[in-house]
Every structure is written in C-alpha cells, then in structure tokens.
Amino acid sequence: MRVLEEVKRCLGEITEILLLLIAVGITVEILFGTTVPFFGGVVANLTALIKSLGENGLVGLIALAIILYLFQRQRVAA
Image (spheres, rainbow, N blue to C red):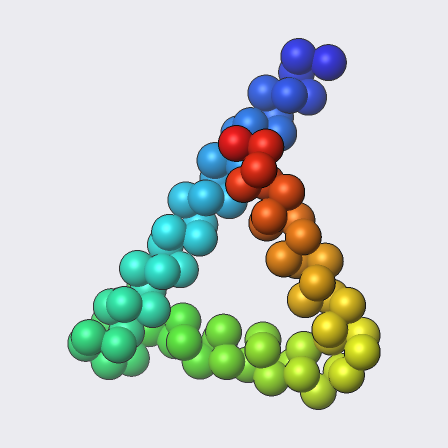
C-alpha cells in the first residue's frame, strides 16, 4: 500500500508541475506571441480543446466535470 501512496504522490506532483508549465506557457505566449520556442501554440491548443468539449454538448460537459473533479480531488488530497 505504501508503494501506491508514493506513486499517487509523485503523479500529483507531476500534474502540479505540468499545470504550472501551462500557466507559464499562456503567460509567455500572451507577452511575446506565438513565435516563442517550446511555449508557442499553448493558447491555440487550449482553445481547440475547449471548442471540442463545447461541440460535444452533454458529453463534453460530463468530460469537463470529470476533469475538474479529478483536479479538485488531487488538490484536496495534497
């Protein structure tokens, strides 16, 4: 059981780092435009994801609710 808890903790920390990188990518793209290496296209990708969820109606809404639930649950556990 201890191994599973350690894996969950590591995955939670990786998720947190990735969310911070997304936030940095959005900020960099807003400040410097889409030509910045590595961070270019973050806003476009997020916009496409949101558009895709929106086009799927109820299924997209359920998927969004599940994603938000998982992130909220991860933050409460930390």
